[in-house]
Image (cartoon, rainbow, N blue to C red; front, side, top):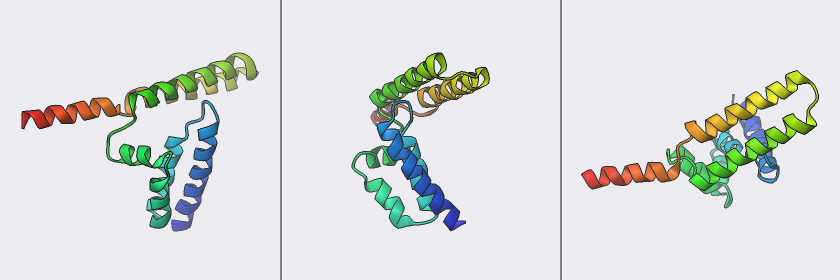
Length: 133
């Protein structure tokens, strides 16, 4: 399975770099996936992902349960919404593909907006727990 995880890690790194320059395509989530794949195949490459200046801190925060900063969540949700609206409204022709893109976009907005914790909220909760101790 190690070669499969290694290939998956490199695929995720490629998609992550693409996501950093393409509006509407997430980048960090692919780097999180790459770190996960590399943790099962090549610890040196996992450390390389964690040491990347642009995304390493976000991957480490996500892994430790801190989630995403509020500003990053707002930007991510906004980019997904704009890209999906533009694609569905002006670019994509077949109705079934429009529905598919709209559904995937809605899932992405839900996942980033609701399922991924907001760093500030998590940190405030940790401070509240420390104050009660």
